[in-house]
Image (cartoon, rainbow, N blue to C red; front, side, top):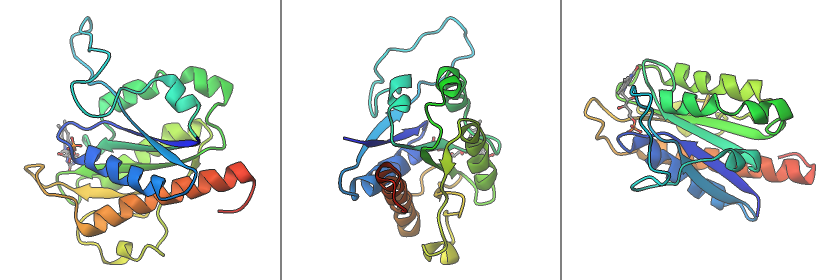
Length: 201
Ligand SMILES: Cc1cc2nc3c(=O)[nH]c(=O)nc-3n(C[C@H](O)[C@H](O)[C@H](O)COP(=O)(O)O)c2cc1C
């Protein structure tokens, strides 16, 4: 069955919570599955190696997960207004897919979590869009017909779902944030399905 790859890095769990809600939105669309994958942390010690299976949560992604997806949701905690290094490190291994145009024409969306409300959600979302544009992906944000965007006092942007986790990284996803995560999942799945059928989403 066609699947949307929901690929994320998360250290404290907030971005992982968002990923699971996006996956739920994907699976609301008949005929479309979500495949949750993560990336290993990077180490300043070059010789360090990680186990091939993480101790908990989603499996690590491999290039075939990305090559064969019908669409992609890419998520990262905000790190100094940018995506986290482990995710960027993985993206820099995707040159074979870029050379072959494997992702060109597939829909993609991005999501992030921050500790502070104005701590760089939008810049992080855009930072994740840049490599996806190089891959030729079709970027989807969230339309204002998702009226939660007009009223949110936590996360949620037209560039993609976001979450305000607080300085202790302990705030749960608000109802608005949860709905917007699911909305992105549905939108990606419907668009991928429509593209596969050669129709408008
Ligand atoms: C090195 C580092 C840099 C960070 N930079 C920012 C930042 O620029 N803005 C912000 O609001 N939060 C920043 N944070 C906080 C994380 O974005 C926040 O805790 C996020 O919710 C963590 O997501 P996770 O639970 O998925 O790991 C930073 C955290 C770390 C460790």
